[in-house]
Picture 1 (cartoon, one colour):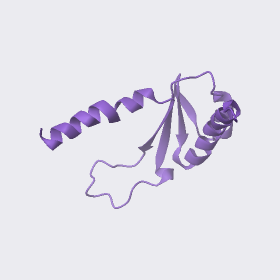
Picture 2 (tube, helix red, strand yellow; picture 1 turned 120 degrees about the horizontal axis):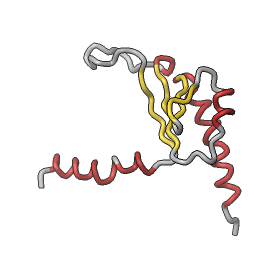
Picture 3 (cartoon, helix red, strand yellow; picture 1 turned 135 degrees about the vertical axis):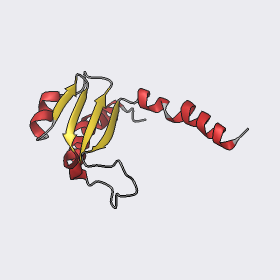
Length: 110
């Protein structure tokens, strides 16, 4: 079998399904022109991006708290928070820390 075809099959079977199975998905979206990859000299900085954060489960997410702490953020859809790129680290910390703490609390120590 052609390696390109096999690679595409692997991509469709193993890589793309992960995006519909994740609980939280973060995507950087540049706010500068990136249409010509040959003209771009640098990757857009964090401040030249928004971060779109998708949540598959809403019951554990405190949107009013996140909106209050992450200045410049907004909700673009019922399950989607958009934050300025420079706030990506803080957003990840605020979202992931309680989730990791709950995981650790539920871990059985033998």
